[in-house]
Image 1 (tube, helix red, strand yellow):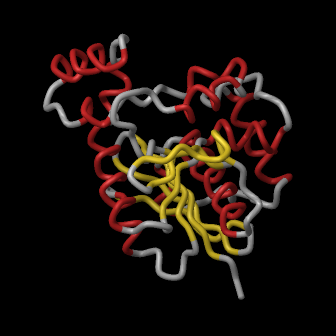
Image 2 (cartoon, helix red, strand yellow):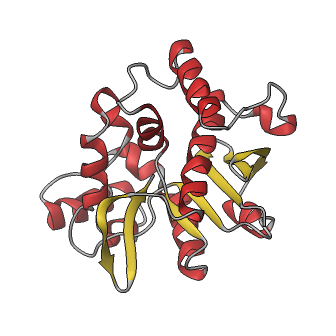
Length: 225
């Protein structure tokens, strides 16, 4: 039976997804909401998402620091995910205050900007346990290459290297992606890398940071690759 998985990356206008069938490129898609991709994913074994899934009640997650430590010059692509109460605040000032009270450190505006997509993804994750899991493209690319990538994903050399790594692992991205081709190249590459990790999840060969995952209220919290 064919193994059907999807990797999804958040981008400025919504979400971009890459579908794999038996580890090879199937199609790319754009959606304004993650729910659209999930609703249209009939038959998908798992859906990997490049967005934090699961927060702890009173501290930073181990997954983020462990992943960052593996990425060398790309470590800044991983941001620390603050406790759940921080995300429940309505504005940055209040959220930053709660973050400092709980962790002793402040919240970055870059992290706060992800709040709408983070809350959307976590609501779906909680409703569909076992379907969604968290992945990180740079962690996936690092595993593919065996070492941290030297060039950033927005550079010509960085994108060429990432496309080369995907092809080496059986994911050949076509030049023409239909409407999905409107998405930025780095977001397409990120979604494909997450899809690679999704195939590993579906075949039972994925690893995680941390291993075993942290747990909170019965939910496993980890970055898979």
